[in-house]
Image (cartoon, rainbow, N blue to C red; front, side, top):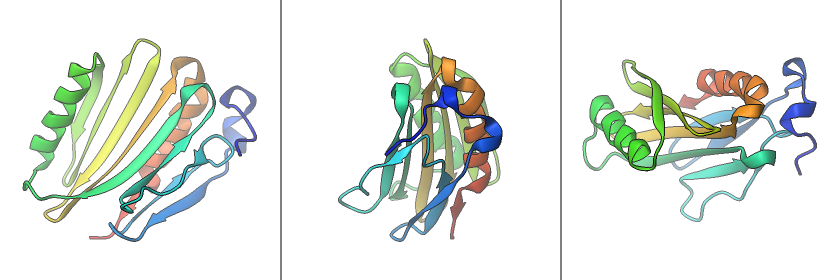
Length: 150
């Protein structure tokens, strides 16, 4: 159960727990006081975490059956966000990962994906702009703590 909403939390009070996915060999931290874990998906590829005011974290893995590259996966995600009316504010490609961030009205999103020859592991967090003070800090932590065994 969510015990706090973002407006009642100081960035210095944020505590993290860890979700580990066995099927795709990845883990990510999450703030259980802000984002409540939902049941793992039926096929074991990931999990969602929901919070007050519409905030949500979703983590998942898929097999890279189409031999996606960082560039092709990023461009596909970017196209999907644009098709749904989002504005892309920032994009970056690393060695085996990429980031997209943007907004649709007052909804902010941040997506980070790791693209490997055998799998793609991603997380996306969405939150309302009025909660940005807290969730910007949470997002930075998520981006640093996600791990994918390769």
